Image (tube, rainbow, N blue to C red; front, side):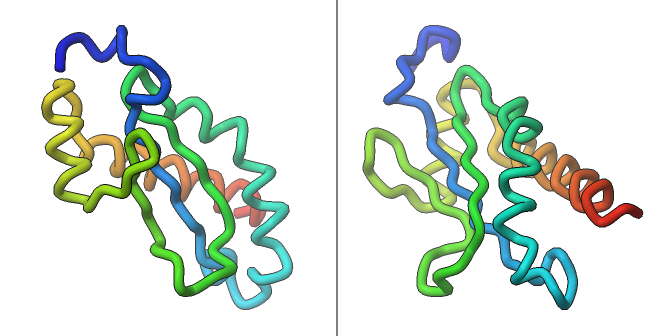
Length: 112
């Protein structure tokens, strides 16, 4: 695949993370939309030369919690991991970074 720095935008792995309202506690359903807007700029920092992240509320339970696409085509987690491996990236590392950032932002939002 080559150098990820030269990867066109449409070739990046698009990760959609749908957050459950429960991550914000028992009243999370009334807060989740505001929270997703609150963290939008912070989550942009996780975008890279090979990954674009979008965090949205999970209002529709029929949609997966995490979705991977490239050029509009759905990918399984294992396919996404292999795709990033070809770009010398790690999906596990990306997910760990995302989860750590998300935990920090939830605590900040909730005033902990």
